[in-house]
Amino acid sequence: MTRTGAVLRIPRLSKRMNEGLEASYDVLDLPDEGRDAFLAEHADRVVAIACTGNGLVDADLVAALPRLQVVVNHGVGYENVDVDACLAHGVLVSHTPGVLDDAVAETTLGLLIATRRRFVEADSFVRAGRWSQEGFPLTGQVAGSRVGILGLGRIGRRFAALVDAMGCEVAYHNRREVPGVPYRYAASATELAAGVDNLVVIVPGGASTAALVDREVLDALGPDGVLVNVARGSVVDEPALVAALQDGRLGAAGLDVFATEPHVPEELRALPNVVLLPHVASATVPTRNAMADLTLDNLALWWSTGRLRTPVPEMADEV
Ligand code: NAP
Ligand code: 8YV
Image (cartoon, helix red, strand yellow):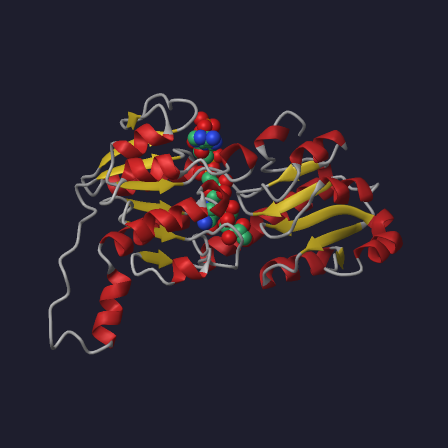
């Protein structure tokens, strides 16, 4: 199949992605300013979009691109893409499931241990020369603890296997019980939080999970509880989280994601009982290479056959 047209990049991507796109396609960059003038000049050339989490593909953009046929998203989460608008315009969407599970699961475990064992504080304690005057306080422990997983999907299951191997008692909540897993099912996020020491959040973002972890869930987790969020900032009610940490109603939190990245509220940054990461759960060289390659594979396959290797689940019947 011979296709003509340009690929719209939103925003500029990794070196590997940019080089892969530029080697094979006519690439345009959506500007932050002067969008209307850009679209007036180029809209009818664009047949594909290559984007990532902070590249918004909303209904207005989809409607403004009359020849758009495919969106390839670099990332497994795709709430940045309005899938309903794409479906309505016959536009296909792909994402990058599976290739990042190990990296995200190991980040989740690392963040949980760093938070529960206060490793970042302990590092500052040594650097400040305090060790010669006093010992660092004893902490809680992850091994053998009760771990709740909100979102037992691809990544959640990989993480469950890691903490299972550490002798943890694993429970989870999804909207549907997963058949055949050896972990206890909880009927709600609150019920899950009430029965564990550590709550790990790894559901998709978007409207359906917005503030799923609210004050009630945080209070159920309680003053000795640790929350780890590697999902999306939108899944946790951030002001409620800050208040719970400040009031001592929640023990500690390890966060890779925030409500309005890269902004992290000053109140969170001022707290000693948090470990904060800049959305790096998948950010290893091999994993980011695999994500870039899968994204480029989807585009190349669509370009030559009209099909996708890893369509988003809403489109599984379309390709
Ligand atoms: P997945 O395989 O689709 O798993 C998602 C799980 O969440 C499913 O088990 C699903 O079960 C559950 N779920 C969905 N909506 C729910 C709700 N409203 N309440 C309770 N459970 C719900 O996805 P994945 O590949 O594991 O990735 C999960 C998410 O992790 C991504 O969408 C992305 O947002 C995030 N992520 C973050 C990073 C990072 O860098 N921090 C990296 C990769 C992924 P049910 O459908 O039965 O509810
Ligand atoms: C990336 C992610 O940070 O895959 C996801 O959903 O959040 C991360 O792997 C993001 O896609 C930016 O590349």
